[in-house]
Length: 158
Image (tube, rainbow, N blue to C red):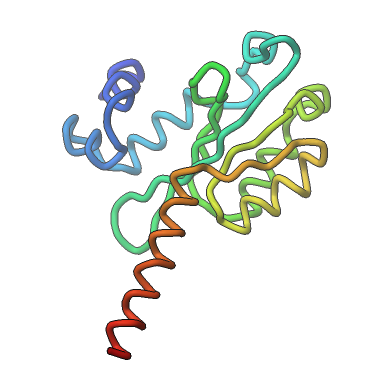
């Protein structure tokens, strides 16, 4: 069996798909290993805070086929993962955020996410005082999509 530390070490510089291929285990097994490591009940919140403030990043990672996603919740101040969700459903994220201690919820100043409406709604619902910031990568990606659509229309007309 692959050790937790070995799997984490490989993930520090590779995607989930590349890591599962490199160490020879399925994505599901890798996710289960990491799920055991990242449980909210084990988080030392005092170590996570800087000057009483938390900033979270919520990002989805595609793996395998059939639209499977894993969601990571990261401390943006330390760059370290806090929790891993094994799917990208809104109710899973809501449940995760709902399980945070009240004092932790109150200290989350900002949440950075992509433009996925279900993530934004979950944060608005559970972290009412947190400012929502859209990841610049996703803004640029969306702008490029709009430009490409405009080019396609222009090509069709001319």
